[in-house]
Length: 199
Figure 1 (cartoon, rainbow, N blue to C red):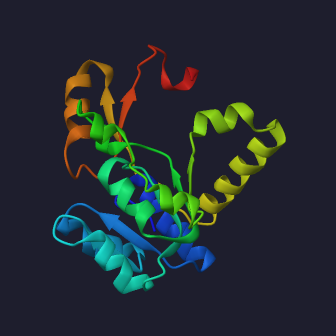
Figure 2 (figure 1 turned 180 degrees about the vertical axis):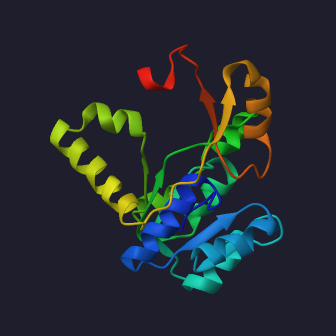
């Protein structure tokens, strides 16, 4: 199971899971994203705008729950993801979108039930790519990058096209990035003053 399935990472997870034969439960917050995620290859899609996440997971995975999950929302949704885990299940948290523009401390937490961690041995683990690169051996980092490059070259993974913005249009780029369904990442284009032949 994954949250923010419509994000760039979420779309890549769907493609990789399909390639590896892993079924996915994908959580989105907008109803208009459901068809797009299914068309991309998402097996099941739960829309938190109008569906109860825990009820839908139980319908899909049964009362036991899911064994593995990734979450980049945290907050209330992250807590529900941890509740949806099977005994011994694990969720990897790699973001906290629920904290975007938040000052409410509740949005900055992932409430966990002590019994889930103690008696059901559920686990929550964090992941931050910059930290991984800082702690991985150079050989492991090169191997991982090589694997990703091969997956892109073999068209297993399709990276979305970015939307270029000159640096002087940075406010427009920020508005573009904050739009609910922008579809692409804004990319700043820096002009270095050299001719194309000199680059």
